[in-house]
Length: 358
Ligand code: MLT
Image (tube, rainbow, N blue to C red; front, side, top):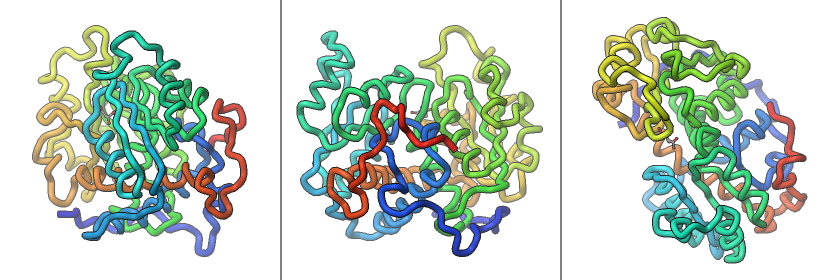
């Protein structure tokens, strides 16, 4: 069941305003390695492109043949369920041949370097490569070595751009905001392991670019130093961070990235930073709840909140994830497919000539 959503607290886009340039100038990048390299209008362009795929995915016939004949390789060097599946479904819905490479069963286990793996994937003439890797910056490194578009499916603590895009689309849809809308004035509280979370980082970049007021909340040990420079307000008291929030985004404790003890115990963490129904009452009366998954129920979020029929957007996030990944795969392969208006050369894969960040 989709939540019934309160009226939007934010203003609609200016009537007749042109959100982004025409043709390939709307997205002049070869790769999608991070939100930090995108201008506001480029984020809006991808969100708008994804709307058609949300609609298609709700039909019984879900197939579009746009990418027929193309090969997409999902190279996942780190575990994933929803992101891998979502990219796989997205590629297949667009008609591409999709191949998944799992690091656990690949030559990486035999000591092959990342660059050698990249060269191998390149020699197979993939038309797009989707990469998840435990090291921040690994995706950028591979993008500089291959000839096709590269999409970042999460690199270490750095970025998870399609997660931030799907989150923005989910919010926009939940608030019934039309295409072209930004999130100006919306108060979003992100709570959890901000220090280790690439989801937090990409969301801060995207939400602030779209005009949202972003609050981050975590115990001091899980808050990056000088994060205020990203345009957010820092809280250590979750109750205070919730006051007036329109959206509450909860994050998992990233145990796999922690070296040492960052919290006294999961029980104490839940007591101070877990989202319960009682605590949610401190936010705006209709505040919406999000979580990128996987969730640790009873730690950062209670089941009553996660499964709330009108407040939780968690399954809607998964739905928007497929649509966003379809939009990204379509847009990034347009030049290679010779789509009219998309002939111009994209920016350097090495990143030197990328458009100015928002
Ligand atoms: C990620 O890959 O970062 C996930 O989507 C969020 C998480 O693992 O907590």
